[in-house]
Image 1 (spheres, rainbow, N blue to C red):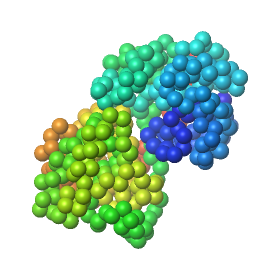
Image 2: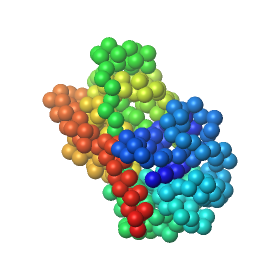
Image 3: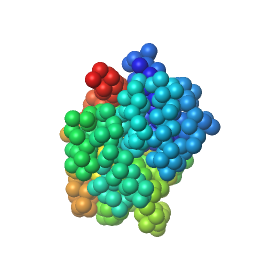
Image 4: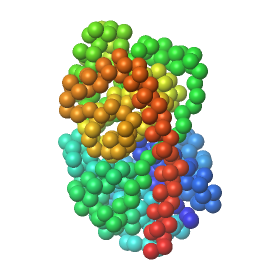
Length: 375
């Protein structure tokens, strides 16, 4: 089986989110099926990321930007699929640039969430247009549509009109984190100016992530606990200027809020290991990978009772109404003050994370490939 994986947005500098999904998925599929031929359809032939040296790579430098992907990309990807004699053309980015005539290969897209339909104001105009045109057209142009949770599958069917018969749920996974000595996390935390007692947020700085309420909920929690910090990890996101300005205004020694920006994988491991809890009360997630990553480290998790998050964490986290700062505050206080609860959540999280692996994601994806090839 020859699979072409389109790598738009994966230039190698910060392989997070969808990029991490594509990297881990291809590696896990190759491990499960060694004779699988994966070819990366690569807009970034200059990238130094080791992933691009693990698999064959077909350069498509004209497709670095989204306007080119949604226009020229339909034809260039079709031409590449024919020239490379692909069995499967897989777009993991949720763009579905499949308007070219059908060829002998099958077309699959992974649409990770329905955010542009549910929270359109949080997305750039071009992304909203892509979802209203190419993604909606995937009901006709794609042979299968993958998504990462049952909640996303329902929303894509409801808002985009994608037929349930074409949707396959392939939940994300997590890689077991590296073991760390007590000394190693401490060194990273000192460098990041993080103390021994802190709550952690991981994710893009985005209005949908509900950071303003997290900060508001944190203030009364910290007032009687001046040693507690809130550590915010993540890059800026489109449309989040006011969120970033607000956080920068809040940050500082007197507030207990530490902004790290994007951090290396090693530093992120140290932060997960050191945190009292991950606080992730997002308004909407297609999956919510930070919650799963935290659980794999044995970190207690506070997250939302909406969208996919209850499905991801099961009974291994404290669920809160993301619109209630009072509930978020109460959950923070419970985790900080109740060591027994914290230990219970840590163990439950490890058990939950062990059931969600990239191998399982790869197995479900390969099953979808075989299904479309044998129709």
